[in-house]
Amino acid sequence: MSHHLTQRRRMIRSLAAGGLLLPGVLSELSAGDAPAAVHPDPLAAKRPHFPARARRVIFLFLTGGLSHIDTFDDKPLLRKYHDQPRDKGNRYCKASMWRHRPSGQSGIRISDLFPEMARLADDLCVIRSMKNINGDHFGATIGIHTGSATFNRPSMGSWVSYGLGTENQNLPSFMVVSAGIPYGGGQNWGADFLPGLHQGTQIVPGSNPIANIKRRHASRGQQETELNLLEYFNRQYRQGREADANLAARMKSFETAAAMQLAAPEAFCLDNETQSTRELYGLQDGDTSSFAWQCLVARRLAERGVRFIELIDGDTSIDKNWDAHANLSKYPALARNVDRPIAGLLSDLKCRGMLDETLVVLTSEFGRGPFVPAPGTDGRGHHARCYSSWIAGGGIKGGMTYGASDEFGDDVAENVVTAHDFQATLLHQLGIDHERLTYRHAGRDFRLTDVHGKVVREILA
Image (cartoon, rainbow, N blue to C red; front, side, top):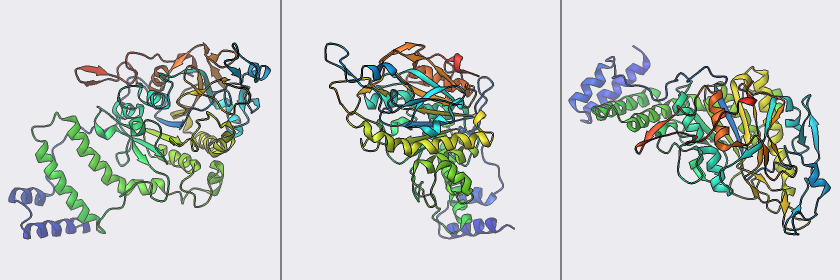
């Protein structure tokens, strides 16, 4: 007889002796080997609509509105007319403070803020014609995450979890590694009307990234007995409620939480990572809170079958994000914080043969404007009608740019890519038809892209 089984039976006898178990419960628990009722697993891996090019997503979100003009969209005309009026003296041109250089064999122009990413230009598809739904931080942030700038909707990660399930039942299918809370809060990784287990699990960098991950009992067998008892009551309650997807999801969430006590500590323990790997990311010994730590953890979660991993840099504090109304001079420090870790992540995935199956996305909620209210202004305003993002891996063409802004970087000049187009393209690479991924709620079928969105096929390999 196994040690765990012995402990289980002792626990049952103890509960029975104390009068804490009804006869029917005691009989079922004592049977032990009786098969439990079989219910569909809401997190089971699902077949995509068509063959997928990617199995997972790593979504890098730079909070605050990364200036496209100062990073991925060089505008020589702004240098020519720097500090000169654009229209009757109400707006003045503002050139970038950083030089943009041709990078890689493709020659994509990337600014000196991101020298490490620039070395990997031939792996990047830089989209210079992004257009978001809304021009304020809150609306634009939830817009790029959920497809709606006004109403609560499930996040993209939740939709991917719902559509594809997970490859590892011991970890959540959707995990968000973020030290702070971005504009829009947890709505950015919420499930809204989808079953709750599809919402993102937030991981907070630090020595204890997931609260309560250690079991309360020293004995694993005693904990298993308690969980079996809980499962019994859940099964009883579910009889006659088999069609309740939310109930099934809640039951599954407890199972996943219990499994995480075994799988999560190992996933977040970097002790077996080599020194060369740490150096690749720029991770210092003992560091458990930097963006480098976030990026290395993302690779480990991807290896372990997590379907959608989001890394968030910054929060709503203007000192800790890319919001630069009056202080573009903070960009070098912000860029150093993310440049090497992101380049390290791409290089590591590529070296391990994982980049072909992983969509790595870098975006912000919007860009920053090319015109300022007065000469010498050290900052730029919100700019949602034109900005830049990039995608690498997962069947996306590398070493190319797509779309273009006008000569000042003020508006899209060709091949606009809306937030819904962006989302539709990412889903497509995962084998999901964005028009068929729907959920019935409040009398209608909802989808991530609402009634919009088209796949940007020109960037597909």
